[in-house]
Image 1: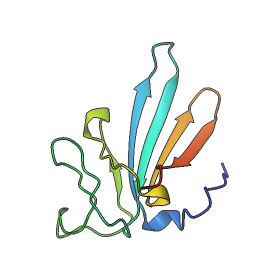
Image 2 (image 1 turned 180 degrees about the horizontal axis):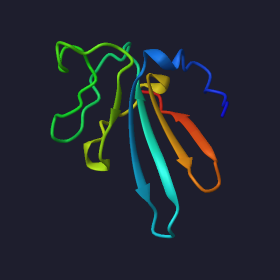
Image 3 (image 1 turned 135 degrees about the horizontal axis):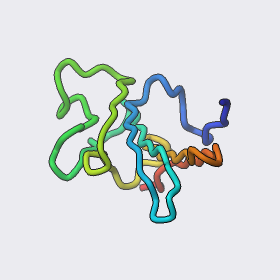
Length: 105
């Protein structure tokens, strides 16, 4: 499957990528994703401080471009930042993929 990334996104391989699956109330199976650029100026973490994406907070073994399979409750988040933080949603049945950058700061 090929898709066009939003303008300003950069190379996918440098982003930390977090993926999880959900089933909506109407039964659609979705794969969700949250991508974090290593150029982000602040960390994207979840409420429990897990899966922090910033090298100063994350594991010392952390390298850019890591892939994480997480539960919905362990997804990191960030506000603002534009294409330093990217959300995606893939509908398994329709094969529709939506990709969008976070809102600007």
